[in-house]
Image (cartoon, rainbow, N blue to C red; front, side, top):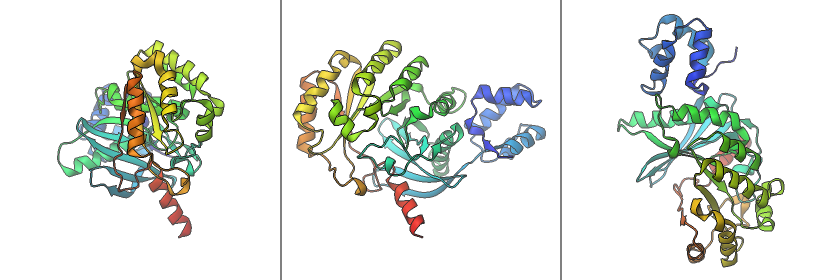
Length: 355
């Protein structure tokens, strides 16, 4: 029997499972506390849980389904982890330090099929979805790293922006969000969690219907269909008109601000005209919009793209501001440690193939 990660179970799932297997209702809360408050590394460390329950858990679940392969630490405090899954696949997770707290960027798929032409994550095609336990497990591994340092630090924010398209792994994403947000567990506030999507319009409707307080970010990267299709093939299936219709539904249903990610590619999408087009596209929804301008991290395999000049980014920023669009520039973390998402994984896989 293949054991699965217990971290993939919501509290309600765990409670129902334990009841089905002859355990008392209160056992679920005991186990939950040991998992997320005391953060034990073995079921046998759950000292007030009876032996029968511990044996039951050990027979059906694992606590740690990720093995740390590589850990890169940046001068700015960013740490990039490369984890190996039980089936041998590799994923990346990143810990970032900000004035407001510690944020972890998690991966949701092994590889990515979205195929953005500038992105390192899509260099290796999707092999499979991560299950909820593997996504939660990334948070637990990073938290374990912090616990080992003995500084009483905790993960306070999560961005679901790692390798893969989160909304393409919808059910596991939802389970993950419920686990990490549970107030009796890790208690990471919904408003401290951001889910990013390349623009799967049909899933944005579903996400809106969940009525979560989780933040939504959309990787837009271009203000018109011709340019967006050129750099993001997902735009063929979900052109800007269809995407913006889903955005309108989200805003009407959730009444929450959306962040639009816009990567700055030199002489591609960084002209003043694109800034004006972007401002026009978002004008009617500007009060619930924020544009995040992202200087590009170069990727060897995508050498046709370069980072926009600082002056050009400033002009783009000022043009948006002049047209009433809230925006900012996100300077990268971990520039000295394979900053682009998917870069470390791609390099390691190439090494193993050569070896």
